[in-house]
Image (cartoon, rainbow, N blue to C red; front, side):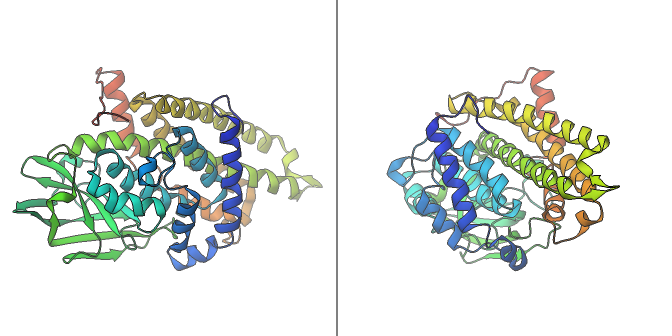
Length: 386
């Protein structure tokens, strides 16, 4: 859908994403769902197209494009691929690599960002722990400095790309507070177990344990003790990209439902002639249009350098709840067929349930918004530039 925020170049890019999805994702996504993982060749193909480095500097292999290109990519992937694919790509680009691009040293950028943009290495973000979900300050994973290394001990859980990925941008407790370390997934002392999930089956999720893992001091992102602030900063991009994927996903759910109710016959006519369904579709289309416009506006503001914490939190909160409601209402219109695995709506219904949980629960989003609206809290960027 065209918008005042997109140029002709953005729209041409949109077409290239659609073509890519049709050729390189759609024919394989069911096999990936069954296998429980996405073929690594997808990352390399996306890297060749420049899709993994849209905003990153050219010197590292990126394209240095404005954030609206990222908005286009997320919307189109949300529409034209499964949620498992979008979650996997998002965790690599907008979580793991985002930290390295913003706060990593030249050494870290050469070692992880460059191959990450090419799709030769896949990253994960290690934040959540078994005993510290939303409470990031309660992290128990420790990193003790010993000479030129940190000794890391602890565990992480619900880590996207944690099982098949190559490196983990990990939140740890150091002597000076929470810090961020890049840990190679195959380093001695790192062990992983794959988790079995309700949905997002093609996206691998793991529990990771660290047992005296030696991590070079040079793998520290930014300054020791600043990790909490880096997380608060980078989470905005994660939450906004989640909303972008949600908008694309909701449009897909709506479109396949419109197709179904135009073909399904009951009582001598197509069911899209029944007022109860027509009005439900009208409600869905209205909500989707409104939140798409808010998302585009917020994305544009971010592209102009605004630090849109409140807006990103609002978008994550409401689009996560809305996509679940849309999936519920649309599956109902399919009747019994909506409960059958051969219909994509069944998978979509399973996949979206986790969205109000990851990237910050809906309850946490409400508290962030309340702090800003009621308490006057004003969050500031952790990095010198966006």
